[in-house]
Image (cartoon, rainbow, N blue to C red; front, side):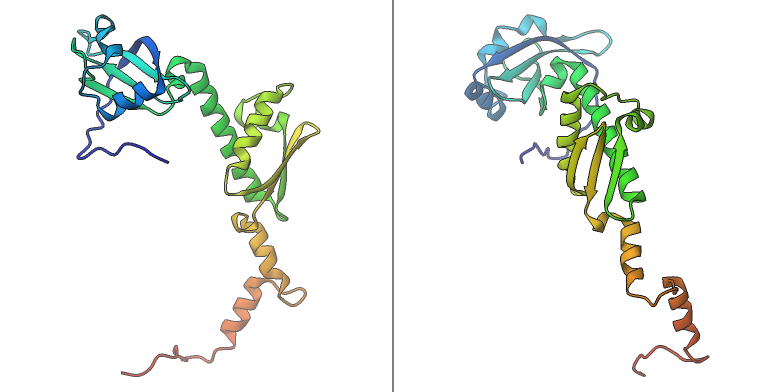
Length: 220
């Protein structure tokens, strides 16, 4: 994975509007990313759409590359280079705001499913029906196989999830036991005598220690 790290960064957020999107060959976008201060044809040809208005809103050109998901948001200030620029890892989110909103809803649904499953399961498996998911998050996936599969792929990318099945109107998720506190307690309980809880065993062990007994530390 790669990203951009700025020296002494200034994360002052500014209002912006995408006035135009241009798609250039991937190699030219790569060149623009590597050398933003050089003159670039795509910027020179679109200087008139860029600028900062009286309210401080940056009116920008969004430059994307063929076959690439990322892009560069540019306000050239009337010049032919990227005087002000912001790297955009997912440029489609700017071109299609609906995708950004949908991504947020799916991410929240994944978090909700995993939070409930890992906190409540005692055997490592937990099911969430489509109607239960809608009640939890407001996201409706009933009759929407694309959303179901997308949500399933997102669930499978999480480290907590060992396996997943989507059938009979529900998500059947198998979790790794390390992420399921109730499973860990049950596993520890299995090694104790019948009818004795971990808490009782701990109390019994403490009661067997003679009063005034200190920890076994070497004397100094």
